[in-house]
Image (cartoon, rainbow, N blue to C red; front, top):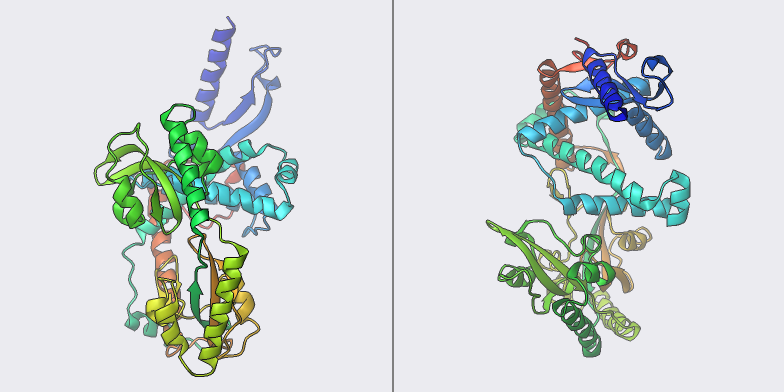
Length: 469
């Protein structure tokens, strides 16, 4: 009897949703079925976009999170927030049609990055759980779906504007009649050259890491431990360790060549590879699956530690090199080309390159906050032409290196000009063209999408017309 009563109430709720009344109620056995007015309303469907509902709790949750993170909403949040959620659902719907996806490993990395950011903000994991009134495991689960949807939505946007191109003629035409006072301000920028060298790792330390990896292999093969369990405990790859060392399907070209050579030769998922040395450290690998020209594996990464003695020794060597450069015995450009082991800069005379992650544009100019923090700290107090004392930092591969930097140029804050800042102006025009194309797509998508809005939200001033039908 109770089962039938629950089914009846579910049918009533479904019917109400279809009719646009849209309550979501907490069912209480003590309330008679004949008295639905006494049901406790704990949430409410306020919009329906396609077949996707938007709950009042979603809007309230986004508002609270925005307040916690200092976000500002344009206009009335009760109107702007559900509209933004609705726009995201339009992109998600199109992404499903166009098979736009993100990998689990991408999402996992973003989840951990967000959690680590929150922990740093409040001071500890325990304080974060107290502040957000839920355990880390629950936060991780909530974030996974939220960030996955956000990333898919972003990728769909990128797909829609992928064919937008801006020519020099477009840039000149756009800024031709713009008054100088209305041109964008360009913040102070720096051009930096760098020489890096990795301190010598002792054979004893390398053997210690290899012995650990051999022990892991023995435990896996003997059945004493699973590869995934050992990866969670010992792997030093933060992007995959929490997933038991598991990486998503990936092509050969996206992997370190030495890692790829071994991984793509694996054929038996029950076996463990030999120890592989890559630019990140030492690995053991296990095959999960192959799909066309992509492979899915799990791995354990271990990084040999560098001794203080080795670091101090390398600092002495680079300090001597800096003295030779200052004395004119060798130029910084020559030293970078022959001494530096930083692949990204040694073939560019040591010049650091700033790549825009959205547009892919490259420049040798950096704002201070765009430089690695250790380098920014040095150059902020240097004069043009100065060479720093040697210092240590962690490079993009997670390895400790000793560094010399030279401040090649400093560009004061100024109004943008076609001669000096063409790339900046080009990016502005390109961004505007992309925004225009996305807005046009959204307007057209709204016309062909079923949208139902709770009457209380029909008097809002929305950014896009067409929601109210």
